Length: 304
Image (cartoon, rainbow, N blue to C red):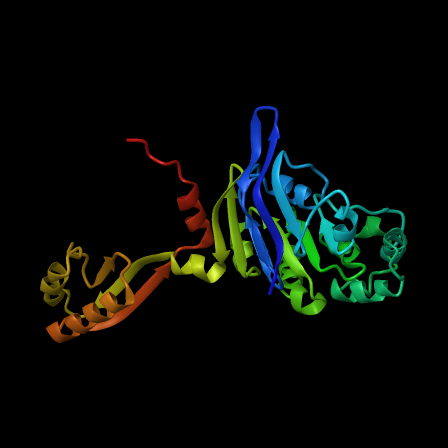
C-alpha cells in the first residue's frame, strides 16, 4: 500500500506570517483521513497547495506516489477530485445539466453522471434546479462533480460546514463509505471533532500550521484513557489496598474515582480488592473524546 499524499517540510508564508510550518502529512491509500484543527490552523492553505492552487514557500508535495512538478501537475490533478470552500454550480440549471458541463470540461464521458448521482443519492432530484436545493444537497452535488472521472484522491474542505444535523448525518454516511464505493482515498478537513470520530480511520491534528499528532484514530484513542470509576460494596475494606498501591483514598462513599492504570496494574488491583472483601460491583473506564484530546494537545505550554 502506497501513500497517496506525502508532504515534506511544507511551508507557506504570507509576508511575516507563516500559515503552514514545515508540515509532514502522510495519507495512506484507501482510507478516510481526518485533517483536524481550529479555524485558521492552516488546513485550507495546505489543501490548496496539494491542489496546486497555492505555491508553497518551501518544501515538497507528492501525490499518488509522484513528486508534484510544473510538468506533471495537470496529469496528477486529473486523478484528483476536490471540493474547496462552498460548492459551485449554476443555480438556474438542474443537477444533471451542471454535471454535464463539468464532465465536458474534464473530458469525461457523460455516462459517468448516472454513477456519481447514485453515489451521492441525488438520482431522484437530478432534474430539479440547483437553486431549489438545500445546502446539504448542494454539497453532495459538489462531491458528485469531484467524483466525475473516478479520481483516486478526493480532497474535501469542511464539507459539513453549515449543515443542519440531518445534513451532517447524510454527509458523514456518504464520506465514510466513499473508499469502498469509489476506490478513492479521502482527505477531509474539519474543526467539528466529534463528527470526525465517526467517519475517519487516520487523523492529523494541526494548529498554527504545525502537525501535533498523526496516526490511526485507534492509536489516538488508546492514548486517551480517562479516569476509572470503581463501585464497591464495602469501601472501608478497600482503603488498605488503595494505600498499598499509592492510589487516592478520599472517602467518597461506595464510588471511587481512580487515575488511568495500565491493564496489568488494573487487573492486579481488582484481584486485590476482591481478596480484601471490598466487593467490586462495577468498574468503568472513561475515554476522552477527540475534542478533549485536541484541547490537551493545543493547550498553551507553561513556562517555568
